[in-house]
Structure formats: structure tokens, C-alpha cells
Image 1 (cartoon, rainbow, N blue to C red):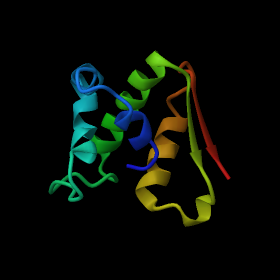
Image 2: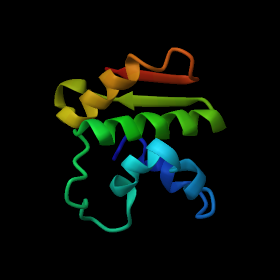
Image 3: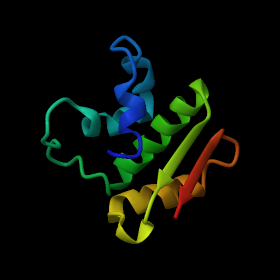
Length: 100
């Protein structure tokens, strides 16, 4: 998951459980170690997108967050679906979603 991967990668191991608690746990398979995404963990499914929303909200609780998508014409469908989902729900979060 390119949009949130760098923020998750910077976390200390002891910070991950709190970040992926509750609904955010639906997105945790996308950030598992290794190259293969577990079966059923497509970034385009509603459950995963919902989990990514909660992950975004928890990251934004720590510090303001900017999600930047350069050349949105070439972005994959799951990433665009996540951006659309977030754009409808982040009014009260310190999150900016920018597509160019």
C-alpha cells in the first residue's frame, strides 16, 4: 500500500498493535512482511478500504497527514477508490488527500 506504507513502516513494533486495533485490523494484511498479499486482501474490497480509513484516522491522530497521488490518471483503481472513500469522510480529520 503505497499511500500509507511509509507512515506504517516508520512505526516502532510496539506501536503497531494500537494502530491496527478495531476496524483498522481489516487493513493489516496489506502491511504484513513479505511481498505476497494474503488471499482475500485486495486493496479494492470494501472491508479493506474501511480498514484503511480507520488506519488513516489513527495515523492522523498522531500528526497531520497528507496523502499525495501524483499523476492520478495512472493510479490503480484500488488507490483511487481509497481516495474517493477518504474524501467523503475526512472533514474533521487533519488529513489532506491531493491528486494531481
